[in-house]
Image (cartoon, rainbow, N blue to C red; front, side, top):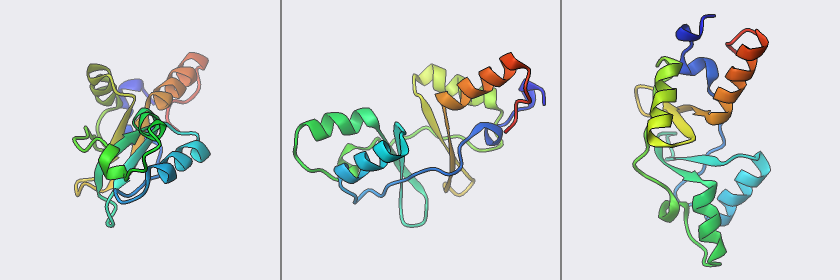
Length: 135
């Protein structure tokens, strides 16, 4: 597959760990630690994206030793992208906004995946080795 034909769906992670707004910060931190991840999409009961929580958000909050809910710590104005968007457009959004992950949502706002810097590093590795680019 040519790099210019790659879509976000070709790169994104679909088995995304999520949290709900009402969950405690320590539970979210434990999810990150167990999953060895740096971003947790926050979803409502229907799977619609309502925010994102980064490891930096959590670690600074948990250092204060005051228990908080995810809703207090998350970023609610989240940039998103669709799965059929060309992968190079997602890279531009991430670079311009200095973000390391981009939630992928369908036309109804339901979370379907997450594309991260790590996904792009894996793409670069495969390209440098002459391996097929799609997963």
